[in-house]
Image (cartoon, rainbow, N blue to C red; front, side):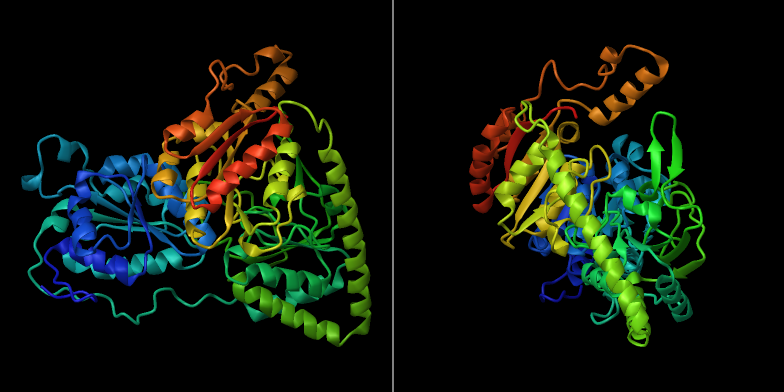
Length: 585
């Protein structure tokens, strides 16, 4: 009944879903197999001719995380298929992280059959829920379960539009198993091929932009604080132009790469520079507290770094799509101006207003030039200090984290490189040159997110001649070791360098804090935190999964030759892993 754009006859209702996947230009589908979408699976393989290709993943979390990393790096959503209720429940953590990271993922699930007469004994009952989307409704932008094939095209189009509208996020479409497996008996129209997929972006109020410009020009020491600006095409460059136009320091929160770290106006990670700031402009931020406060982790006490009379302004989406369930929106910062809208439009408009005002006032030009010079001097001094600090215990074995960062940088600095996620507790931001927007899509989101997101980033850059670097924590890989097989099977080239301190050390540090506070035994702080006795052999693990693997390497002088050998594999289109052992701190 009917033909698709390739003039192939549709025979089954699941063929309609395949046509929609093609019409909306999804390049990959990640999945872990399951009988609930066997109809759709067959349609993708035979009717759709395996285009787009399916990536078989060892766990549903990995399937979602690959799509997460891919979207962050490419700006394009991927499709994911999850098996019934159980596959959905496996994937919940990854979906939640995608939601709080504002990442578009088109998740397709399956259920039932909802028709009790079509259910297999036991298994179709235990894998079926009333309104399956309830399991993740609090952390997707939208979910829907069409009752019949007639509802599939419209809901698919709506889901895509909702998913890609800022602030972006995952959506969930649940397709009844029986719906997929029914023969197609009539023509089902698809959305028009030229219909708008994503609404035009929302412009902030011009009056608010004018007021922000006036405040920026009137203050003495403004700070720009972007968080997601760099996700949009041109955002990185727009931030540079705005900063140079107003002569303001920039603190990049790093959920995207928003600003070049070696630019003279970059003040990221230099909290001492915040003490003289008299105005902070948050740009597409949801959390300015962490960057502008000092935290005593032991006592859970937070002390502001900026002055009490500092003025706060905001442009972005803080009040849109705010969760009613999780508190990922973070602490509210009172602002004198809050301009609701897309920084992709708002930042260029703000820059233009400032340019016009500066051109009309020579005194402002002089003020901006002097301020820019002072910020640049501080930036250079801070950068030099960081390089000196990195040399401490340089030849220690196991190696220090700065030595690990330096050795990797020395090998890849002349390549067109991309860092996938982890920044070695910001050490690479103090040593590497993040000069282009594609260098880093933003940090990972906690344990059991790094390897999957990193593979998605690598997939997005595949065939572009770039060297993808994953500084891979050991505890994170222990969650999802099977992910290495996915990288090997689909020949996703990436240089995986283990950041292996043989511990879940972040929590180990918390236990050290508790021991010091309570006067308990510091030597017991590692219990329940260490990853030794036995020590995982990640090099052997990588080889067992079909990829190049070396290590463990403790002596830093042995690291560079191993990295160069691994780099040859990556340049040949293969993944490779080097197991580097580091000190705990």
